[in-house]
Length: 390
Image (tube, rainbow, N blue to C red; front, side, top):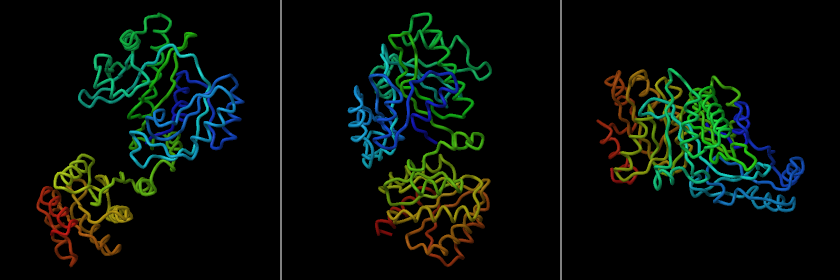
């Protein structure tokens, strides 16, 4: 789950990380009033969407007068921003963050991710802040320092000092502030079950402060039951109606641009299914993971969500029965096909627990279901059926 910058900064403050004062606005008048209440002589008008690259797309603008705040708010609000993360369709700006300005001395990058290779939470920091970290990694990887946190020990001041010195902070007071900053970011990451915590840029000011000028936090959906306060930050306007509906039923669904609907259990299997569809010349219409504990009713709901996408011209069901038994999946597929009147080609590949019974149920259903022996066979059959070659 993603949150907006202003929401992320509110959480950062709770963990002792300094951020600039700011107020949100949904209208031009609210933006001007926000600037007035903040005071000062300089403000930043920021579009609030769930995507990076807002500045390059014209979604972050500096204002030195209230008239400029008004003009920038008018130019950004209700406009569609297209960035490298939104895709060509872009995202409409419904909320602005009006923030006070600051006298920046240097910009840095700081982030936390789970390194799946080591199984440890890992800091990444760089002296090159304010630009895409992927670009830094590609062009000047030596400017990125990585420090893993031993889970048995947790965060220590040594980690903070190593990161601070590694990105070129030498002043003793700033090193102490940086260490506290990194500690707060780590505590937030762990306590709120983040999947990504990224501060770009983290800045030092000419007044000797260190703060988060921008922030991006992503949270593990599977851990949200522990954090109702984070769940409340979900912005339904940033997610598709189908994705929200899927979330209500415990399904992991992401809409894509293709025309072959995918119903799979397991994220890795879902990724592999999409890849092999593309390898055979097709285009997946979605990522949909029904999970290991899906029921007949869940499968039927998943079918309904897939078919709600008018681009879908065929469906591939790829299930490996473990906790979820193949016969249950077969019953769900048949129930959905009958209830929804599925008219597009339907290819089903089952393997695992109760596979023989599952196949028997499908074969005796009287429905036009195309059986597949393995994933490669299933992909070839659904691509051919969608193209009218079957």
